[in-house]
Image (cartoon, rainbow, N blue to C red; front, side):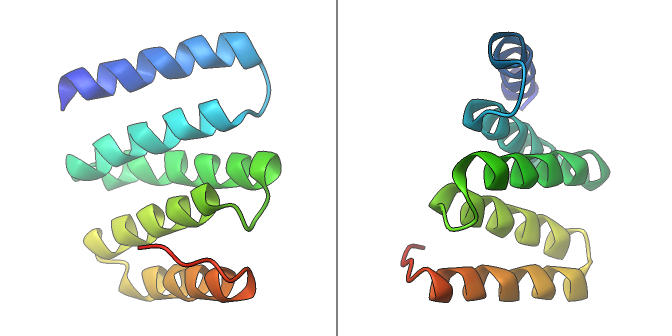
Length: 107
């Protein structure tokens, strides 16, 4: 996990230098780093990264993009693992509403 963390941190630094502003690649790096922290049960470190990744993805890809919905799913899963079941349920409901509204079908 430590090697993955370092790779995501390096990629994030490089992509921030290349793209400067919001970009889907930066959001991908933020989400990946959050996933590493979630796997390490470092939920306080993961949460702000998920929120940044979601916000950036919505701005750059649009709310209905599958990457946005997957980031919400990752975030909801992290909330459940951290014991924030009610908040996770709210996010899961948002995921289902987005999928239904945009007729998106995926796991």
